[in-house]
Image (cartoon, rainbow, N blue to C red):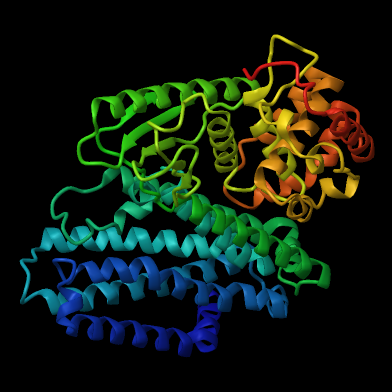
Length: 531
């Protein structure tokens, strides 16, 4: 009866297996005949490892689909249930048949390459035996994996892709040396060069994994008389297809985020710089000149120390663990309070060009510039948006000008001389707080935007200082990942939601109090000096 089952499998799938053997051997001969390719790895045998790693699993996948998945999907295995044989024997016939086809394929791969390399390379029987053992164990692992996956029916491809991409993630991102683990070590880059040492540990690991997968496949085939496998082999419903497509899109987005994260960004290195580095800040000040003067070196030191002090205080207030690096570059051709932004990736930090001799380190405009750009770089340029732009600009102007020793006032060196447009005629409405980029176009100057936004932060601060800190920390102190998760976070924790839950205000209340505060900012009534 078992011979009849084997004959049935040969009659049903023999043509496909023969075609696979033929294509495999032809491919090996063609690859071997290409001298440039065959010698690119230092040995023609390295092509065998590549074929075993890539093509053999694909062949097992086709074989598993034909022997198991398609038969359960078409329910032709029901006819076999009428035979006077236990179910496990019928499953064993399929397993042994597939394993024999896989082992024969891998043996042909190795044999054809050894035959071709016999004249060009030094090959002895111990080396050939070692290659044969590695190849046989890897083939067993491949077929056992596909054998177990085939009983998952319509979910086998999804689970297989998850496993493959999971291994790739572990290798490239997680720091796990997958290519040095168990079965993958057998067909690694050392496949064609290790001639004497048997990888005993890896062979045992491969054998244990292959046996476990085989047991898993038999268990799924025999649970409740194969009812589970039969149910899984049915075609997907519309709802299942929708879920799978959603998961596929989410997986691709995650993969893109991972690929972007692992993209290497070269750190900026400025020679002969003044560096201040601790657990919160990383500040470097350098000069874009061949030989800085003594005064320029002193200015670089003062600017680096003052910037580090400011950033450190902001980090503590907003509960930021680590700011991106700040690079200050001295340029003699720039005027006082003239700044130029460098073109850096947000993961590299922020580069600011200025004349350090003409611009004072305590300049409020300089501090606002540094705070704004570093906070935006910390969230990968996401803060300068319609709903959070006023918070970023307002805090950048508010922090250098407010006095922590006076809880009831905030001062600006500019308010006393501002025109009526800024002081008396600007009206804030709730719509402006969700369309800030459109509103800023009406303000005619960037300084006007900063001073008006400053009053908004001051308004929240006067309402409740502790709640203001919680609100600012939630918006500006968030360590945004450089992928779609930041967009999900910004949508879930919207500005209106954070304002309502921390300060107990809505946009309408804030806009009303903000407008009143602007009306009260008349010239000559500024009470405090900048911090």
